[in-house]
Image 1 (cartoon, helix red, strand yellow):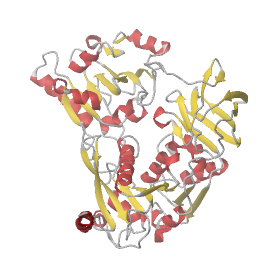
Image 2 (cartoon, one colour):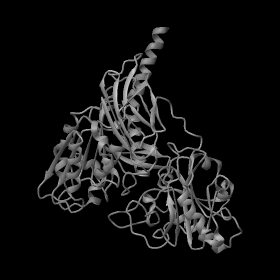
Image 3 (cartoon, rainbow, N blue to C red):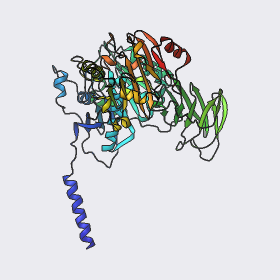
Length: 552
């Protein structure tokens, strides 16, 4: 009887194996569900021949350039450019044959031409998570590359979270503003740059300057510059699957002897065995921590107020023995596998930082753009008995702000992000629990603002502010609330910015709050809230002197 049951079980397993669904090897397109806007988002995938789920595979994440997409990116990284006379639209329609490599490759669509910060950046990490969930990935052999806008994304994503990547390869990169401040983070991430010296889209000086800086900082960096080549340097860089051979030299070091890390946000507060516990958002914060011998560390910091070391597993950490730490030139005694340090009255002490309940922290630090960087909804007001015309105008403001997917031109296309637009009376409890709120109006015109009025720090006095706009972000109940009262932040002529629709042109550069008259060209007061979400005295005076804002 027992042998019969075993036989039936074996037959069932064999049948299940025979009829179970498997992905075909080679290039294809998969999707993941994005909780940012409740849509299925595509990404290109290459699965090697004879894929064996019992084996761990190296993974390459490939980021496409502006005007491109995930399908073209998957071709490019294998060295397959367009056929003679073929445009990108035609090349997108099919995958040519190419040489098999023993790698899994994923190429996020990342909403189109939208850069690689905010929602697109989140998409990259969602793709990474989806691939790791579906396939057997070696997390110590995970690599990042990209071209042009994607090369810039490679630098941004690689520098903000360096401990994920074994190596990076930016091709003719166009990095976002502020990325060069993070160059020191590449200490343990080998990098290979590629650029044409006749590049008319991204000056070759970008790669030259990065390579020079990384060499001066002691990072491992290689560079190939192509004489006479314009912006299509990727045709040379990825030729004959070169990049896979180069990546194969490197594995991630989870416990390097030295960690050098900089950040301006709690959002990026950790690398390897170092975590920033207290910093000032918007201010460049740095640490350089290195083992000089077992249980001996030399650490220097800049603009950092508290941090923790996670030493368990490090080969130079000996549990049960005291740590000898020199911190900014002074000896500090510490013990344990996770010692923490706090700067108090100019002196470092070995103790744990305990933030105040209202203090800035990960997920509650601003600036304004962070409210737009994950799931959010646009809420217009219905309060105050508006006329039909006024009600329509209110809804139109929210609709314009939410229209990420407007058609820009044939090259830039649309940003494929589809947030919801909701009347204040239709906001559900699940929205309050899961979404950042982009609120339009005032406590007199928007029911949600009115509900939160005692918790919000600023209110526009509409009776005296017909020519002013107030725009700020504030954390409430684990999510961001962003209030746009009076004139919308895009009021007046704005320069085009390909990362956002016209109404978002100024969002990336804004701080935590701004009060303006007429347009953002005429700022009355702006800045960051302090660590406890209060406005400093000088900016508070400017705001109070206008009499158009009630400041709590």
